[in-house]
Image 1: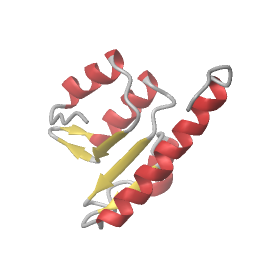
Image 2: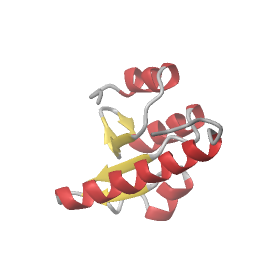
Image 3: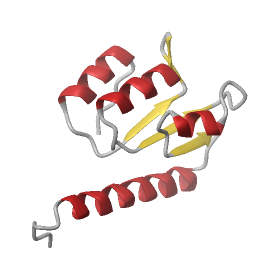
Image 4: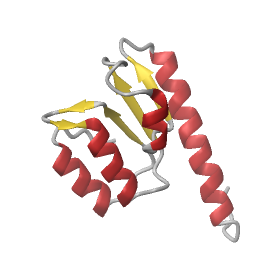
Amino acid sequence: MVGVSDTELAFNRIRKQCFDLLITDIRVNLQSGVTFLIRAKEARPTLPVIVITGYPDTVTNNDLKSYGANYILIKPLELRQLNTAIDHCLGSWTKRSLGENSHLNFR
C-alpha cells in the first residue's frame, strides 16, 4: 500500500509502477479527482479504481463510471462498503490476470 497526497506524485508513481488497485478521493489537493482519475486510467486502463467522495452532487456516478471508476463510495462510508468494493475490484483484476496469463501455473 502506498499513500500519496499529491496528485502529480501519485500520477508519476502510477505511470512507473504497477498497482493492483487505486483508491482516490474526488477532491485531491488542489487538483480535481476527476482529472486525476482520467489521467490514471489513460496511463493504466485496466487499473481498478474506487472513488470516494463527500460531495456526491459534484459529479454523477455515470460520469465517474465513464471516466473509469469501478466503484463510487459516499462519505461517511462504512468499512464493510470499502471491503466489498476492494474484494470485487481485486477479484475482477485476478480473473483478468489469470485469463491473460492462462499459460502460467498459479497455486
